[in-house]
Image (cartoon, rainbow, N blue to C red; front, side, top):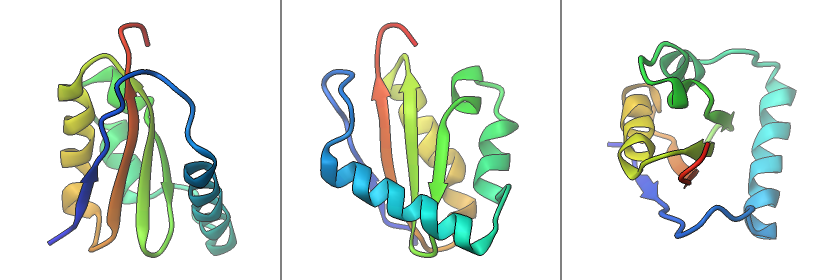
Amino acid sequence: MTALTPVAPLNCTDHTEEQKALINAARRSRMVRGENDSAVVSVLARSAVSELRRIEVTESDQSIYLSGRVRSFYHKQLAQEAIRPVAAGRRVFNRVDVCESV
């Protein structure tokens, strides 16, 4: 079963330096492997919810990072659950911010 790590920010702030470092490391790992599109990106791209189609996905061998902004905690959770079947045992870090205006 995939370990999901829900993160519920109270406001729309930028990522901490530690979070940025993790995201950048995952991006570099993905670039080294030469991946352009993935099952995770495809699942979100096919979503009927337009906000989910705009979520940024960063992947590595061990983790998946979701980032961006949505208008509700429901959409944040929906993005996380939508990718669960294709996460392939990787940890999911849901860094999506919930904001009134997207």
